[in-house]
Amino acid sequence: MSKIVFFCIPAHGHTNPTLGVVRELTSRGHQIWYYSYNALRKKIEAAGAIFVSCDDYDMEQKLSPKDAARIGKDLAFSTQILVDTTLSLDDKVCADMEQLKPDCIVADSMAVWGKAVAMKLGIPFVSSTTTFAFNKYSAKIMKQSLGELFKMIFSMPKISKDIKRLQDKGYPVKNVLDIIQSDENTHTVVYTSPEFQPCSDTFTDKYVFVGPSIRPAERKIEKNKDILVYISMGTVNNDMLPLYKRCINAFSNTDYQVIISIGNLVSIDELGQIPENISVFSHIDQIAVLKQADVFISHCGMNSVNESLYFGVPLIMLPQTSEQGGVAERVLQLEAGIKLTKTDAASILNTVKSVLDDPSYKQNAEAIANGFKRCSGAVGAADKIMQVCDASIQN
Image 1: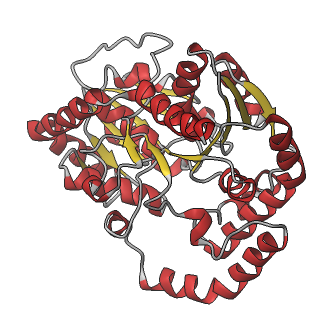
Image 2 (image 1 turned 180 degrees about the vertical axis):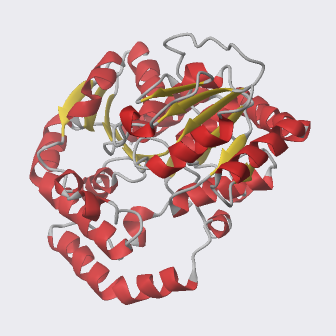
């Protein structure tokens, strides 16, 4: 029996793919400790792990909404938050690891405190990557503007000061890339297929592409028209009342069934009169909807795109971050969707029609789905983790 510790950020999209892996590992008799956040406690414990709360230590959760919006866009600010969180967790996590003596740490690629403590204490490590894996070849899909590049260059002195704070606490990191990038020598589980992963053939055998982890639907959605259009901007950057209103306007006089999930930042009452063919929810079982949908208007979060393509549903894409832009670019390359360039009602409707009228988008989405379903899934991810654990025990 092995002892395995998971670390993750407070995000459903990063947590959900790991839960099937936790179930697989616990079913084999291994013990799992999962460091995460109280909002995710119920689902983590249901998967069979021992939950450990990080809420009192996470700096990101103490940010104002304005500052939180900078995460992922401002490298210096993001590095500061990552370092603050790592140092805040340092005493607790290091003491816990000394007591547990785990055979392996599995950390989300964005939960850099997991990787940092593994480096500091010499514990075998596996990176859990719920987006694309990046190296010098695949990173070309993430297009940076010249302005973003200059911003990063000017922020380097500030980043260096934060890295020095980690070094002063015994963390063997030379620069920010040591903690935020994958490398050829890090065992890495990637939750997508070799076909969907850009440049998958350029990664070493340390990487295993296990496909997306798709949970079962929790309810049944009734499809009452020939065409079902699903609209969701995800769970984070979804304060988009004008867009939702334009979508309602676009589809109000169509014979489509339309389901819109708007999240908690917008009130359904703010949308005004809603036509009979359109249903609006704060939250809905996305898997249940996608099993019935014909097209998905999405922000292009990796989790949402994986789920859409798994069910062969082509995408209308409106990315909100550079990461989402990279995912959208890959969908465009594989011709399984169209990017929405204008968001007026007429453009939204015409873009949906163009996808529905061209069967190649559906065919290409189904081809990606077939690749997903050939992957090893949670079993393959668990096998990779156990490979690292077994090597640790033998040494």
